Image 1 (tube, one colour):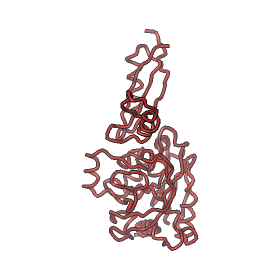
Image 2: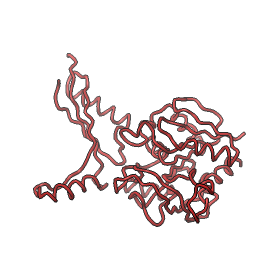
Image 3: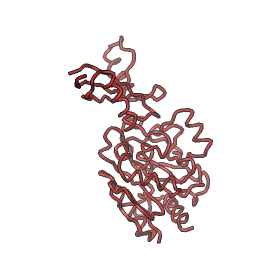
Image 4: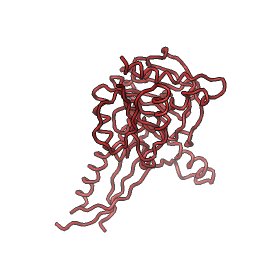
Length: 227
Length: 89
């Protein structure tokens, strides 16, 4: 039976949204896993939710990156299990060095909460296979530390290995380098993204006149783990 | 050698290739607008003040450096970390 794990930290607040999407819309068994657990088994995928963790003290994601569950996420991720980090989940994946780069304070220094246009740059991941290459869709963001930064030599490397998965299309809401909104590890099974796909999965939740295209992230994942 | 307590300051600052909008705002909208023209630039940083047990300042610095690197107190992708011993208590 398929099973997806959602690690939760003190301050996570999008965990139940993802749980709702996976259990009620996709009928997948899903567990919420407290961050202190240091031994997890038989998960087909892991999704680290957004919100905050440990008050985002010092830097968003750094304290959570030292939690016992992260050793397990690293073990599964290195074994090829799909891992998605959304918003604070992305910050945690960067801080525990499963993903390259850093997410620093938005260039305008304010919290950004709005719908933006996102472009899919790489469809060869477990989370993007249902999209067309360069497909653009609307999705909400909500972050204060979402400005993605890499050093120049690392950017070259990331581009060479096709690790840029999403980029902001019309407007870059936080001053990210090359408008990068999501990256993967070099094998593509671990992806982090600042926008929130779990907030767009039902018609009641989307803005007037928009579609639920962001659901394709979960469509892709479910198709991948059912293979 | 007896163990003493040392005051240690850890300064975490973004690398120069990253612009610092907070420092730019302080400089442009506070300092220059109030005509403190001799001030030429501002960079913001985060400071941690530690009290560290060690037998000498060098050992205190080595201990703090090791801790900062192992726990990623600073993210080496974007930040530099400077460690200064202020005094023994």
